[in-house]
Length: 282
Image (tube, rainbow, N blue to C red; front, side):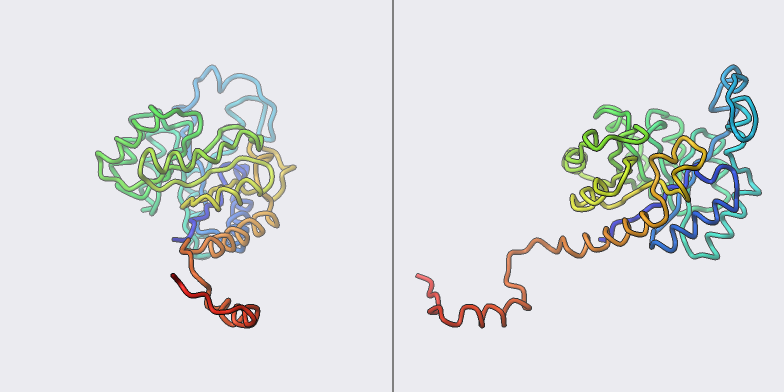
């Protein structure tokens, strides 16, 4: 089974549909299977006190200005939906509140995503599980008990899912990756497990690909120097093309694990072993 590669655009579009289109182009050109966004209803996710607090950004001087500047409404998502159809690439989004999940239903998306931060939001998990769409569940900031509770919700609803091992630091230090957790999750919960990475560079993602993940998600950006909290943990276009190409090579290199003489080795063995008497089993 091929690793399902997700290019996480998230909020790296900075509220600009043209940047979103460019990032969709990057994902398509690299060979990703899908692009993913994030959707929030600002007044449900954040308190009025927080939204009124000061924050300098390209959109104004309050947290509200910044948060609203990063969000697409229906007009923006209509354009994203049309552009992804034109480019023949799947899109979906992680939501941070119930209204956002309802909003996405109009697009009849093939996948859902539970962000790490939302793993303990029972009502949201139940709403997503009701849809019975393939759902990626990131496990950052969560222990075994929280993960187990989420899995029960999806299994009880008959909703297909896969976990995504994740460490929610931005960027993540290499020594914090704990990639062996991928195997632990596979064995403990008997399900598919992917990897959602926030590290700088590509080596950790290569290692995850070699551990039998079924999906791989990385944030992408046009430039890590752009404004935004996720840009530093993102991969630029050339790096993302390199990542997807290497993952496809790793998939082929892993093989089926059977111990046997490869057919391409036979003539070489005949030549290099010509002087050796035939081994007879006793």
